[in-house]
Length: 152
Image (tube, rainbow, N blue to C red):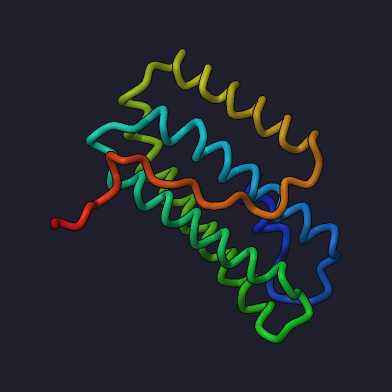
């Protein structure tokens, strides 16, 4: 869903239709929301906390770039923001597929993964049916287990 949107954008240009930008924004909003609400909490384990923390950070960065780009698509620098967003998404997807998902497949049974996938797909469909899920949801606060507290 997210990779397809990033690839279909085709690169920097102001000529992309506004509705296409909206579709990309909606898909990114839904993707990050369902991963943060369902997938990351379900696979939290000591062995992959570093991967999850990085994934949350990457979602935050992508949301920030997207919001900046959507704020004023006619402003100078829009093409650069879109290119940065595309690069960030491609990097995030590659890391998930190459590093995170293989670890998750070892942690969860295929039945658990199937159930999780169905839950995520149902939530994604509900979000899209509810209409334009933009603006991108605010970054989810990290769970206490990932928060580094300053020593007093």
